[in-house]
Length: 210
Image (cartoon, rainbow, N blue to C red; front, side, top):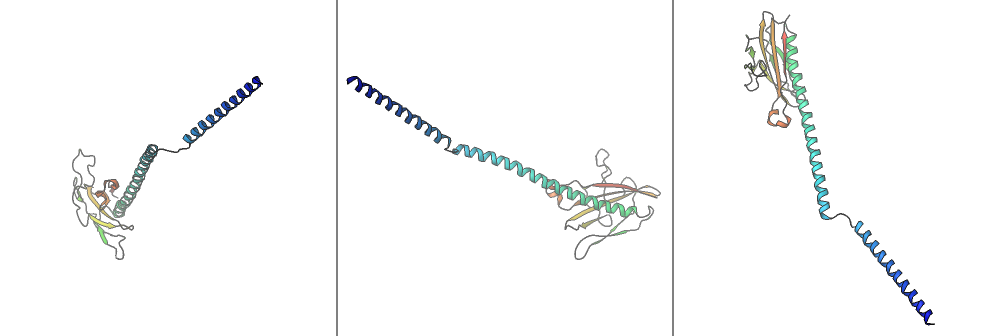
């Protein structure tokens, strides 16, 4: 009997140890699962927010650059069309004609009326808007925007159809008995106040002759 009782006691003790081991393993698994599901700490959240802010700042800068580039292209296109308008009006007249050419802008309700003078001056200064006179300057012979506008009839402030106003200037220079060199440039008034939206004024040149 004593042997049987001893075996039963050892069996119960073994079962108790196994039960303790199982409970310990279950507790460890629960602790591990709890650690995995606890979520982000405050520091991790702050780092994630910082990375997101840096990315958004870069995206915003790219958007602003795209807007500025699109605006510069628009200004450059309108200024080029106005300069081309003056050149075309001069080219349709005979080279030996000094008659003024009428031009009307888009101002509403009453448009402005201007005239384009085709009277030429001697080289190298010509007549009209001042030209860059320094031979070493890459802009030599082009309209000098650092000088004041010559006024009518060699410049005007053209009201475009989009509501903006452009300063248009030109110079007419004698090249020969029947030929003239016409240089025209234009830029939007006020565009130089913001460097992000600044557009270099286009410079167009043509020779008018028979």
